[in-house]
Length: 103
Image 1: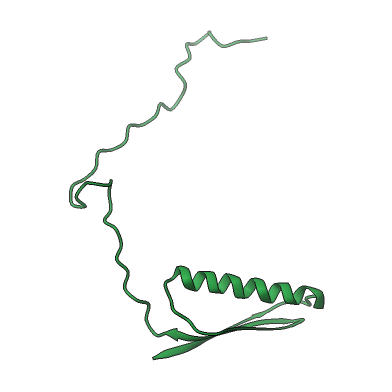
Image 2: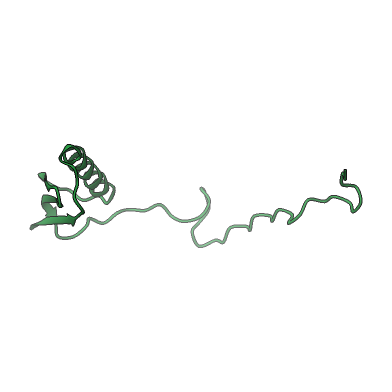
């Protein structure tokens, strides 16, 4: 079963010359984020007035599909085996007292 997403953003007065780019940018951003979320979707429509930007996405699934994620840890190690702690770097540079340059 698919659902429909309606997103509406109220704005201050937007000049009419900016609306086509705002509509295209909004469609591109939402499309990219839906693809990053692994959501299949159908048609994307944008609408705009000087005080409102709206977007409709049709054909969204009701649940996100399961993803197979890689195990945690370094490559080649088992996820249940803890990895070695990385060495700490020194907090201050080892400069002897009195060896700094003074004018």
